[in-house]
Amino acid sequence: MDTKTIAKAVSGLKGEIQIPGDKSISHRSVMFSALGSTPVHITNFLHAQDCMSTAACMQSLGAKVEFLSDTELIVTGNGLHGLKEPDMIIDAGNSGTTLRLMMGILAPQPFLTTFTGDASLHKRPMGRVIKPLSQMGAKIFGRQQNQKLPITIVPAEGRFQGMTYNSPVASAQVKSAVLLAGMYAEGDTTVVEPFTSRDHTERMLEAFGVHTEKQGTAVTIHPVDEFRAPKEIEVPGDISSAAYWLVAGAIIPGSDLMLRNVGVNPTRTGILDVLKDMGADIEVLNERTSGGEAAADIRVRYSRLQGTRFGAEIMPRLIDEIPVIAVAALFAEGDTVITGAGELRVKETDRLQAITDQFNKLAPGAVEGQEDGLIIHGGRKIEPAAAFSYDDHRIAMSLAILGAAGEGVTIERPECVNISYPAFYQTLEELR
Ligand SMILES: O=C(O)C1=C[C@@H](OP(=O)(O)O)[C@@H](O)[C@H](O)C1
Ligand SMILES: C=C(OP(=O)(O)O)C(=O)O
Image (cartoon, rainbow, N blue to C red; front, side):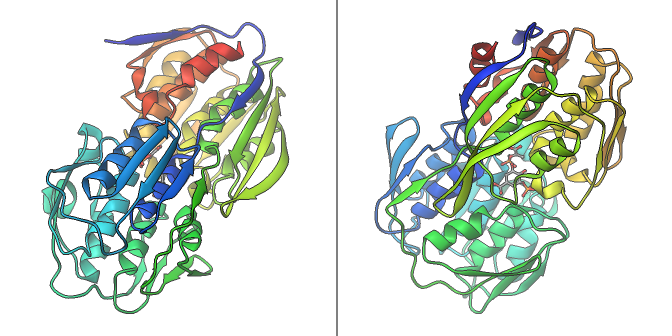
């Protein structure tokens, strides 16, 4: 088995880090540009496996995707009704975002599409998107009673019907799939969520001249005739990638890190709230907006942390950061109690189980897994150990930070960081 050994950081982490492009915004930049009819120049695109899956999907649907460098590309579509039937099966790889948003775009099209993905994506629930799209008129067939990949979409009979969908989960992927299908529907489409999820779809649609209306946790889209592509999209850095350095800087004594160009869209900044609540020394500097998204530089310095508690309400604002927040909790004084985190069980792996089983190898007895959350006992003894990533990028990177802050770690199957942060290990080395 491939392994990577991360040594204990003997002194603090110091330096400046350019945070790579936001994964959610990179996906949407290529998808939406491919629905326009004029070239869009995209910069600071996340050159990582998940976003490359999306770029390949859009290419197989007839969009022109030209890379000028790893992080800069020009995407030219053939208009909102200009996608073509793909010659082959569309492969979403490891990416839930690619698959679910693409289903929303492709369900209303007058051609057949079949989707596949990797072993992890075959286990993830797709009924949450298939169900509302079917209510709008889609004809979608998937394994296990329309729940799982492989999935085939056949042309609908007649036009999609707009509707109000009360989503049982706060999920930007579900919300986005339904809103994107709503662009092609007759009448308005509204998605109501239990709590507001990330709003990158709504913000980027605005840049394409498509207005959505928000009321509480409800978002409404009207049928769309004109989709006007902007000339440029600049992707801000990904706070979910910055999260590893926010935690490392906060828990490794002597650290002082400056994170450059971090996206600070308020639907994504739950980790800042939680770390500040734990006593972290975090400063948000140079706040600015670019392409409808907020960005800033963030300085983090070591300080002593206390345990905290948080639950369902904040969950959509930090959903992908729970594994690394759990690392922070191990180094805090007292207990941290996380509830309302059941969605973690249906990510790239069951992240609640992965955290419980693997973190306890390095901090014996510190993590108690709960049905929908975690109890983490801070301040327990940390030991060197080998731990498994489950091929989940967020688990691998969280283990690396745990090892660097603790007594070292050997990560089994470390390569999955390429899903969202290919330069992660190199950056960690450079900061020592
Ligand atoms: O819309 C998006 O770009 C994402 C939404 C979230 O998933 P859910 O919608 O399943 O919560 C998040 O976990 C994922 O990494 C990216
Ligand atoms: C859950 C994630 O992504 P996706 O759902 O797109 O696979 C993630 O990046 O943590």
